Length: 272
Image 1: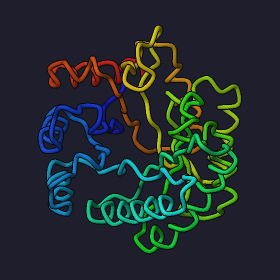
Image 2 (image 1 turned 120 degrees about the vertical axis):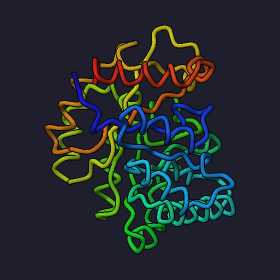
Image 3 (image 1 turned 60 degrees about the vertical axis):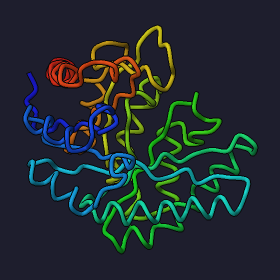
């Protein structure tokens, strides 16, 4: 049985709870890490919220999310850069050292154009990120999202971009939901490790059949992802950070979230 010292839960996982409720319940159940989605901060003093989380003895693992750089409209690309700079300020106020980037894509243009705009966009915000001491994690998304959510769909592409940007402030986030199918995954995780670029590890499961490609993620052990094997690759590559539970699920959001949290902890111990 895994103890809970490396268990982190994303606020989106228990979406019906406010960040205050999430913090209180996570801490009371022995969870040690929290990743904060930006919507959870709406209407709040971010610095005070960060202090509230630390007062609950929660490590603030990362802020989700920046990104969405590509657009065929130059003015919208500028708005995306402005929003990413705002995310850097929010992360600094919150007291975390990592922002996860969901890089975006524009279906009205080629994937190559979107990828170039992603790389240019990240390069443009590195000065602000480095000045704030905040790293940026490129998260490759499953190819089914290549139309509009991310033109970065394999860990190889994320590694290539990280190497091209060549900054200690840029790395990758490995999410098993998006990458479990990749025959090169073990090799590419090892490549991350050699570059000291592996910044985050996200877990959930892929249900079969899945009823919604976005909002029907499974609890660990509920699907076909070899989570424990992938965790072993990540740790062999030198990663010793949190295992972050990130589940989007319309069905689980309907449940009593206290009961859902107990399920998360149980299956984390059994399957991660």
